[in-house]
Image (tube, rainbow, N blue to C red):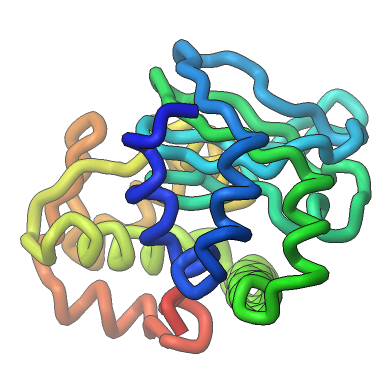
Length: 232
């Protein structure tokens, strides 16, 4: 892997505090690769041979069962996937595919585990990241189990508005079919849910959303940082 990529990786919380010689050990076995859009990277059930780092582009983590599939998460630069499988030397629980042209670093899992055993700062950073992801899973479960489909959509719109800068008009993060999967809905239910938000001032034009009444939408959605704030 070219050394020009090292600084970007080193800035990640996962690698920032580890010893330089241990970081170099990881990088010596790593390589970087460019992938076009819609390419499968890993498949659930396969052994976790590599830790992946997304340098550019984006990756969809998804799962399949009995002829159905669902999107689990989107990975954007600069971040890793799937860390838990790497540390446990366990099969992947999710599959991954590129959503667009992506540049990805692959670090052999055996090297990650070896350095984990000897570098306390690296081990602490891994535990911190796994704890953060566990909390994100709990928040997602609360969103799915405690809210109706209309409430999930309303809170997604508020989160996306915040990510887009807070203005009243912004674009959807995903195309609608994928958004339905992310929210645990069918495309037909998503269409009905968008119509169900009409009374709360939400106007939909293709993939553009306009919030006509911020107060009405927030009063209905009741956003909660213990569900909706994935930074805590």
